[in-house]
Length: 479
Ligand SMILES: *Cc1c(COP(=O)(O)O)cnc(C)c1O
Image 1: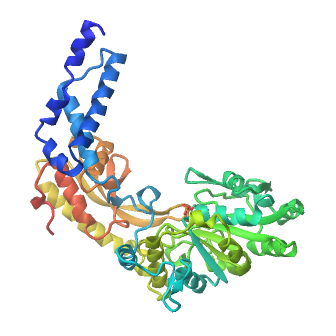
Image 2 (image 1 turned 45 degrees about the horizontal axis):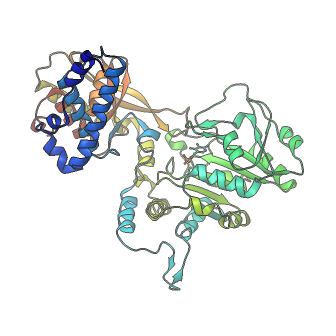
């Protein structure tokens, strides 16, 4: 190493110097000295590497200390952290999809901290089946003859296709060869399940005849897939479920539909309906032999996948080896049973996802006004001269691939603080604040959509803003 490089390297602060900084003690309690040391070692090694590659890399000791503090702080608090969802997207995939009802959360707590009847029959004092806790409820709520739950809907599709069509053929419309959420691509899922995909028709039009002409002796399944976020409008046609069912049954095939979201109740009152979006019961009634759907989309429960339909088919799936690898954990089952019981009692409005979707514009307006007043009052306590806070109409969305075309009219509180930089900068500071507020954006303002705000979220937004503006919490969180 040449002399110049050596001298630059010497300016990098030493481990001992960093460990002696005053903030270290606080984090040491949370993650331990050895972990802090290993984080610093890594950081210093990266810094040396950078300088070796480019000796002109600008740095100073304070920046390195600040980088170390930021990294150690990040590792000192939970990484899976609660956030405020002010985006107006109800089933937000990146923010954990559905929130659970209180009943479901209580059921998780009870199952987690105590031995439970997961696979135990109290009547017989012997082994029971974990699926039994929810199967009767699913049958009751969907009209299905039988039902089976697995880890998620992707697992449900893979299990069903593997058990029914491995080494055989499955026919699907080209209009339904979709990719859902980046990693779930229908052609690849079919290949993974070992079934040969026979795609028929065209992207926008597929007739019953196309399916009929493609059926061979090797065919096992007619597959219908909900196109999720993708929509064909205009010149377009598809065979109906009734037609496909009649065809499948006349040729001894299974008609399977991947519904995606899995609605248990009619949501047309919230402005959500369409031929592509039947309830689970409607899909089964129109002739589908089995359907698969998620537990944590429109249903509003925990992450789970359901396969519901004909008993002889479900019995076959229950015996499949793959099921062992896809089975559902006790906490999830407890939450799912509690959620389904709310539907059973007609109390689905206690399911947060359902409640938020059904919230009317008129109910949202007073909430938006209250939040705007709170933020205005807070701004008056600061030295900031130029700011904009106002209630604006917005369109919220269901999310999770459900009803991509339907828009839920709502309201948001728009905020801009030009002195703090553009809206992107403000959005970042809100995210990084202790309350982790995830806001929407429009032009040069951030938007707090009130539809997806939960109790106390107004306080959290207010506290985040107070933190950003450097005024004490005691100034922000009354009223
Ligand atoms: C969301 C979705 C899936 C995947 O469901 P997960 O519960 O995320 O595994 C599969 N198919 C369709 C049509 C979907 O919308």
